[in-house]
Structures are given as structure tokens and as C-alpha cells.
Length: 333
Length: 221
Ligand SMILES: Nc1ncnc2c1ncn2[C@@H]1O[C@H](COP(=O)(O)OP(=O)(O)OP(=O)(O)O)[C@@H](O)[C@H]1O
Ligand SMILES: [Mg+2]
Image: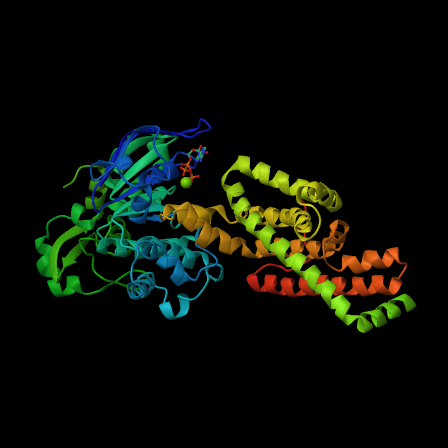
């Protein structure tokens, strides 16, 4: 758990990077710091591993003020993907990943095994990538190695400063998806920086929206979309707020109870079978964890006004565009 | 041209004498260069850390190069007298600047993001220096060492003016005696040594990842 309590950071040259910032990152969750360039996101992150110290206020790790930790120990137990990645060009990919385990005095055997494990996890086959040097890699591959290096000694806290920045949208999307899967298996507390609201909504359990030097709103993605605190947040989310909301809403939150009609007349067998969409491609049935957006897109493509939601072969509900519209308006069925 | 031929003949006929002075020359170069390395590398490392030390160190290095070596030799005279060690002092003063300039430049030019990443992962300053900055700066540092060695090989000819050893004894002695064959016989080994050192060191430099090109190093920072 990381706690910021009335934290202000003023640099030596007088720049106030953040002012009176307070928020808590719960154990094992991901908090995303999002905001325009220069608003103090990187600074906030650097306060967590004491690359910078606050001028006022306190940062706590599990209730203990950071000033009571040794900087070096603290950093060796905190994964950090810096904004520029900063892979060591003169070392191989394997050596890069081994950095923190070596500093922490692991056995070479353990380190070897860990390098392979992480490369597999990051979808970089060790046989081909272990001995490569960073300048030989593509941007996306470098970002993966950066993340692997930060995860290497299994830190309790992971700091990621725009880890998927500077990538083309497709690579970015796929890295995000992969990382969401990895994240589900880790019980790491993650602080994630981005300047993209879409990435924030996708990656965060909670989001802290920064305006210059201050946190304007700190909430769950859903709550931020439902009730943007002020105009700044509204502008930051953009005019397609309803669509963004559909992306963070799950089908199970909007569906109606199964109707007689679908459950019996259509038959469970029919409902669970892949349906043919207008475009001619087959679409598998909706699951409770699908996003409302994908439900809507299937509704649009299908001739039925109402689609069954299927879990483990049972119809557990139905969704119509009416249901979705209602949830977007704010009141749930 | 005939002087050159006579020089070669002299060289062959007096190979013992030439070899003796050559060895003296080499000793000057090796000792002065080692002493320069022993001072310049740690001084540069300190200089990178502290701006104030950097000014002092670069200033000293510049002074060492600007004051004519003969003047340094003369200044060393009352202090150390005549002979080998005062010569070393003069050559040392001359040799340190290129090493300092390149070591400072090499370390400072290491990508800031790599240093930042290393610090963020919990490396101490010393660990960052040893495993990030020095390895990455090595080709540049080595280029400075190469320049310095070639400079010292040439300058060591002056050592004889304060009683030092080396090929200068043959050259200056030859000039005084109007013995051109001896002058040339003394000049050739030094020239070959400089060229040979430069070529082989630039090969090593390229192996280390530098460009091994014509040096651009003595431009003061
Ligand atoms: N070391 C420093 N010394 C002085 N000012 C700094 C320093 N680091 C950052 N700043 C300033 O503090 C403010 C916040 O910088 P910070 O890097 O935290 O922003 P950021 O939100 O990460 O921006 P970006 O999205 O561009 O990465 C900026 O005005 C920046 O210029
Ligand atoms: Mg930043």
C-alpha cells in the first residue's frame, strides 16, 4: 500500500511540480496517474522510490514513512520502468533483466531461470532474445524488456512511467492486453503513468487525474465517467464519454434477467451456439464479463433486439440496447 | 635523400647505441603515461561528480598543456634537479589533459536515461560508475589515452635538455655535432614508435566500439 499525504514537491529551481497531493494505492491494485504533459506525474512516481523527496507532506509504504527506509534497499525492492526505458545498451537483454536480482545477491542459477521465465512471460523466446543487445530490438520489444527488468526480483511495488508510450496503436493495444493478463496473476501494487485517458480507463483499478501539479479527481474508472468532478475532467475524458463508459461497463452490470422467450423458445442450445452476424462472420455468445461496448456492437450487427448472455452453458440474462442505454444514463436496472 | 640513407646506415652500424636510447625513450613514455593514467582517471571521476573539482582538474590539465614542456622541465629543475624523474614530471603534466578531457566527456556523454534507470533500480553511485558509465565511456577514454601516448612519444625527445634519457640525446647531440646521420638515426625510431602505437591503439579502440579515427580529443572542454 502506498499513501500520499498532503505531498508537495518543489524542485531546487523553484518549480512546484506537485502541490498538496493525497491519495492511496491499495495493496495489489493498479492506480493510474493520468494528465497532460508536465503536470507532475513522473515526479509523483519518483517520490515513491525516493529518487526525489517531498518538500512537504509524507509518503508512506504500508504505513511507514519513506524517510525511514534506506533509499537503496527501497529501490531494490521496487520495480521501476522509467519513461525513456533506459535499457543498458552495452549489456545483453539477459544481463539487463538480471540487474536487480544481481544487486539483491541471487544465485546465478536462480537468475538464469528467472530471465527465461520473464522472457517467456513477455513473449520474447529466450533462445532468440537472451543474448541480443537492446539497440538490436524494436521499440515494442524494448518496452517488453523494460517491463521484464522491472519485474525481475518480484517487487511488491511496481512503478511504470508511460511503459507503452511511443508505440504504434496496435503494438500498444496488444502490450496492454498482455500486461492486463500478467497483472491478474501478480499481487503487485502498481502505479502506472500515462497521458492517455483511454489507457488509464483500461489499465486502472483507480485513476488519479492530474491538472498542473494537483490531483483533480481520484476515483474508479466507472465513477470518473459517471461523475466527472469538473470541466477539466470532462474535457480530459472527451466528447465520447458515453462510448468510453461502455468500455468499462460489463455486460453483467446492465443485463436484464433471462426472459421466458429467450430461455425457452430460443432454447439454451441455440443461445449458446455461435451466431451469424450481418457481416457474415460468426460471433460467439455474450459473456457476463464482456464489455457493454462489445454487446452494443453485436446488437447493432444482429437482427434481434435482445441477445442472451451465457455463462458455462447457461443463459444468465439478456441484453437489449434499451438496457445499455439505461445504464449509460446512470441508473441501473 | 642521401642524409636519410646515411642515417639508416648509422642506425644499422650503431644499433646498440640506438637501442639503448630507444629503451630509455620507451621507459620515459611508459612511466609518464602510467603516472598520467593513475592521476587523470580518478581525477576525472571526481570531476564528473563535483563541478568545482571539474573546473580545477580541467584547469590544471589545460595549464599542463599550455605551458611549453621545456618550461615545465625548467621549472622542475630546482625542485627535482636533473635526470629521469624531472623529465617524468614534465611529460606527465603534458600527458594528463587528453585523458582527463576524454574521460570526463566519455562519462558525461553516457545517456542520462541509462544512469537514471540504474539509479532507480537501486545501484549506488559507485555501482553506476563501474557497471554503466565506465564501460560505456571506455572507447572515448581509450581514444584520449591514445592521443596522450602519441603526444608523449614526441615530447620525450625534449627530456635530454634536463639530463633525461631517450632518443633526444642522439638528435640534440647530433645537431650540436652537425652529424645529420646521427640526427636521422635518432628520429626514425621515434617516428616509427609513434606511428606503430597510434595504429595498434586505434585498432584496439575500434574493437572497444570507438571510431578509432583521427583524434578530435585535445579540444579543451
Ligand atoms: N529535476 C527537475 N528540476 C526542476 N524542475 C523539474 C525537474 N523535474 C521536473 N521538473 C518540472 O516539474 C514539472 C513536472 O514534471 P514531471 O516530469 O513530473 O511531469 P510529467 O507529468 O511526468 O510530464 P510528462 O508527461 O511530460 O512526462 C515540470 O514543470 C517539469 O519541468
Ligand atoms: Mg513524465
